[in-house]
Length: 128
Image (tube, rainbow, N blue to C red; front, top):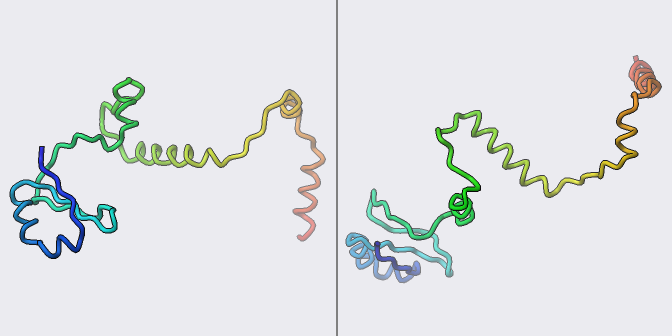
């Protein structure tokens, strides 16, 4: 596992050569600004194995068998559909839904009255 260091911007600026030397020897240097990491220094092309999972919820679901990775890469249409479904799921919390009571279901099963359609036609034709 690679060594890690976190350094503030001022400290990095004052000791830049020393930190570059550390990076050359395999240390990963995180640069922080006001206690928040804003950059990372490492050798070009270096790939670090990570102990921490970027998405712990997904990792738990994978271990439990709730979700699985796709067997084949998704095509562009499937990616767009997945994105659309993600947006719908996120927005669903803001939707107002009504209960389907027996009265609502009864009214929904009745034939649509003709009169409102005639009224709409009359309004549409009136300006002509």
